[in-house]
Every structure is written in structure tokens, then in C-alpha cells.
Image (cartoon, rainbow, N blue to C red):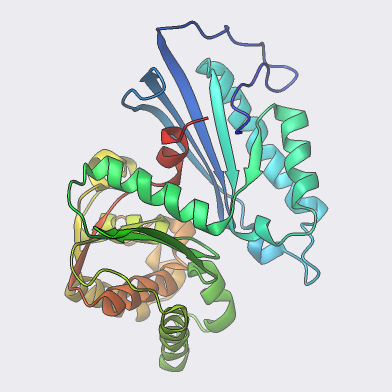
Length: 328
């Protein structure tokens, strides 16, 4: 059972009105991951009504890089996360949100004090968050992406490329499967890329690691059908290749944009020739992703090669939408 009702947020925030039956409700979802914390506020008519996004917010928390060798989230990182959620709580109150669902992913599945931090967030802000398994994250992200794309076919593969993990949700006429693999753009960057710009040895090491991880999992991904990618690296590549201004990067602009292997490869070559600081000036590239986008792009290309396809479709709709699509 998901804790869905929030009666009051931070102490200084007044409680919102009680929800009324048979009226439009304002819902929210929160994704607390290894690299970012994200918020979606949306309006819907009833539990199964269409979602109408009202606000999206993303803040970079970079928990994974600050996790101690013992798996402890330190005091400074805890305070950083609490600050983010205090700001989120005011937005929830401003929009009179009536139901909220929060999911913790990535590093929270292995941090030894994750439970204490999540409890502190709920006590201080009223925002309930539960740690979800990788397979559930894969399923919810896949559902969110497929729903936004209005997919009607049978064979599909959806991958959600995060900072520390990559999730796969795939299926055909024989059923659906969900998997979570322990590699992501930020983790691969920390482990293998130390030069700026990266050298060929580092790039080859990242590619080999991606190929090994994919081969070791022996996933029976559909050989046909559609390939959909979600996550910050995919969104960034879509914005760069389709010349979407940063202020216009929304699901309405990103969802359904096609990324071909040839264009992604040329974009990678360009990024590998310049330092991360220079990448921040590239059209459509979020400056906060300049240092991880090379590894993220290598993951995208590795997955395209594994699936044996020359293109994929980007989706900015993912776990946040999926959280609002599930039943109580």
C-alpha cells in the first residue's frame, strides 16, 4: 500500500483543502535517485483520468559520489537532500496537492542509513518516500514512457538510463519483463573517465564495461519492435540533436524524437574533442550533465548495438508518470 495522502507539509506551510469526490485532483510524484531529485505535479480527473502536467522540477543532489565506502550518506548530503525537499514541500502546498507518491532508487537501495534519511524527510516535510526495487522502477518507468507515447504495438524495449543504474522494461506477445542493471552515466564516469577531455583508452574501457554488463545479463530483448530511451542523458541528446532550447525541454517537445546511431556517434565524437567546461556551451546540453554525458552517450550507443537497431525514440515521461499511473 502506497502512502498517498499528505495532510500537511513543512511547519510554515498551511495545510491544503481536503480532496472532494468526483472533482479534478492535483497529484504529485517524486523520484529521489543517485544523481537527481525530481518532482512532477499534475492534475487528473479521478484515479484513471489523463494526467495534465502543471509543474516539473529537477535538482541535482549527486548522492552517489558522496556515499562513503561503508555505504553511509553523510550529514552534509543529508542536509542537501532535506533542503531540496523543503523547497518541494512549498511547491506542493502552493499547488494544493492532494496526493503524493515518492520513490527512492539507485544509491538508496544500498545506503545503510537510507531509511533514516527518508523518515527524516517525511517528518520534516510530510512527503512519503519508499525505496523501490530495480524491477519495479523499470516497470514504472516503462509504463510512463509507453503511456506518453500512446504505444499500441506488441514488441517494445524501454530503457531508463540513470546515474547509477539502468532499467529495462521489455515485452512481446508472450509477456513483459523488467530488469535493473548496476551501471549508469555517473557511475561509469567516476570509475573510468578521469581525463578531460577523455582519452581513447578511457572511452574503450567504458564501452567494454557496458558490453560486458549487457552480455552478462543475457536479456532476451525483442529483436523487432520499438526502442524507447528515457533518462537525463537521452533527453539531453534529443535536445542537442534536434536543437531544442534548454528552456523548452519538456515532454511535449522531447517525447517521440528520433535518435539515430549515426547522429549520436557524430555528437559523441564532437563532445570527446572538448573539455567538459566547453561542453556546457553546446546547444541543448544541461551544464550539470556536461561531465557525465560522454559516458551516458556510450551507454545509449551500447544499448542500440545490443538491440541491433539503428535508432531509438526519446521519452521524457518515465518513472514520475508511472508512479501516478499505478493503483493504490
